[in-house]
Length: 169
Image 1 (cartoon, rainbow, N blue to C red):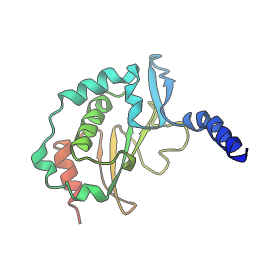
Image 2: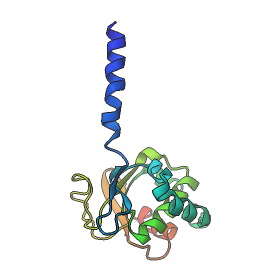
Image 3: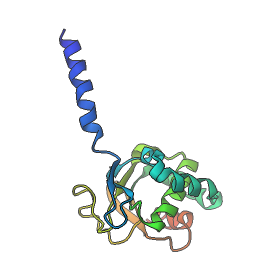
């Protein structure tokens, strides 16, 4: 009986925990849906976002030559992405970045995705201390310390900028 009660309580609590991820809000500027707070890649399956995410993802061609230089180093890297679904740079670069991560077989649980509004605020204090002024921002961490970041747009390409960041000593 205790097992059944425990399972029932666990199942009843799942919707409460699920509300914290992939929250869709309304953009006050244009009334369109926007993601806000902690998200995961499944958020881009929503039709409000899939039309641009899937299109950019499919069109992008990964620079495999550059990525060969970091295929081992990326395994020891954690990544935080701060984006705005209302932002044209985010709509282009985030799908491209995910295509790069897929090419590298990078584990999705090592990516922290945070969506912000036009004032660069999430739902809570998700970006506190991250010093976010422009989106998208891709932050790379080694052993919990920031190794580098790509802000708004890469200096060269996403892949080449990743090589520079991940080959720093």
